[in-house]
Length: 229
Image 1 (cartoon, rainbow, N blue to C red):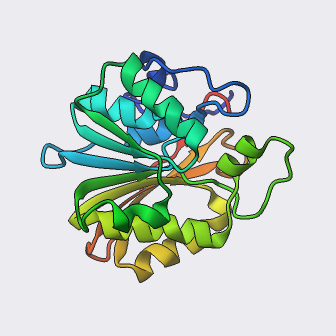
Image 2 (image 1 turned 135 degrees about the horizontal axis):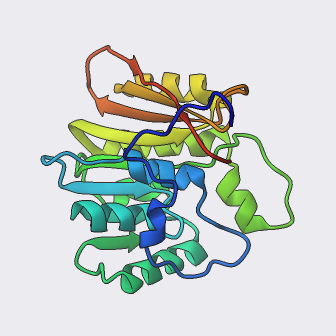
């Protein structure tokens, strides 16, 4: 692509190919957003415990557990996807590093203690309006209502320790909603990285990294331009 910037040297669009995955059928497949989230969610040495909200087949959780040797919890409300995430655990020999829970974000207070995790990672449904589809699984992983989106944010605030880090990948269309809801819960956005499929078109995603009870400071990073979307 003429005039296209090169990708950051450490981002590989194929990085998730190192993870063994069960076949979910045609209804669900890891996307560029999945790979970007796995790449951006790099725990520091002090961040030992990680939870992924809406983990689907568990590929991001597995990548973090394998790459960074961290203890990871994968939370997925859909029973079919949660069962596949458990298969991901088994296929990658992660029984000692990764635990799958078939739970929704609204149920975390009944299972986990407050402030139990150093990092929260999420790739929530990107459409906050319904997308008509005869495939219910595909529809549920792509779209949700505003209340469900708030449940992701509430769970993040509850689970994350003070000064802990949250990492999300979000669509530009509703970024103002997400930012305002994070701020209302004292989840301070700290870094925002725009993702483009074409430098001549609008951004496709934002990677967001923030800190619970962090200071007021936001850095907008140089964009990533993907080879394809």
